[in-house]
Amino acid sequence: MTGKHEEAIAMLRALEERYPGEAAVAAGLGAAFELSGNDAKALEWIREFAARDPKAEDSSEWLHIRILEAKIGLARDPEWLRHNPVLGVTFGAEPHPEPPEEGFADETGRVLYATDVRLAIMHQLNLRLQMFPTPDAMLGDLYMSAADLQIAFNVPFHQPLLQYRCAIELGVPNATLAKLRHDTFAAGNPPAAENAKRMFKRCRYKTLAPYGTHTRFPTGVIATLIVMCGVIFVSWARARRRQR
Image (cartoon, rainbow, N blue to C red; front, side):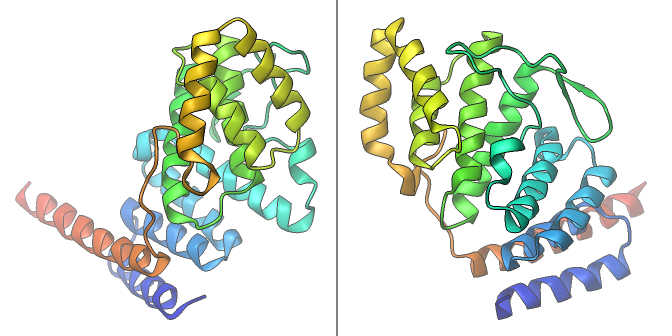
């Protein structure tokens, strides 16, 4: 844990004591603990954030929770992802991905549609590719799930071929299946395959992102921004309440 992380956590804890129940503070603590490497505490606070504001972050915090659970699982067992995909469901083992029989649901049991899941994956990928310096197999698993979901449910495509390539590059555990699905889909969509090839040459894994490349920020800067945003939000929320 760096000094910046410790400072951010201390300031956010003080805000939590002064303004208990604020969603922004719980979100800030979750992010600060995760950036510091304490995934167990991060999970505790992100669950609290989701409970305080279920619609926050485009209603994608259910996926953030599963990402943290996967990180904790990987810390115990490096082979965790082989048997526990981040989404908690699989898309079969055939060349063409199949819709999961159990469907999708968040932590509360709320049913999720395929488009909800896809947007949550894209949102979390965009955040994580900016906040964390080294993309890994867990993000590869999310890229593969995004591509599988789009094909299985025929939701609007956003480069599933590019996402399969990203998944393979990042070391997704089932790279053989990812390659098979990439090749199967590419065979029926030559223009999309050529476009994905061109885009992949520009992205590569150090700057992979679903919508192009993004600038990374040092985690110390992010920790400071987390506190600033929390303070601003809490001040705004309190001012609004006084006006009512």
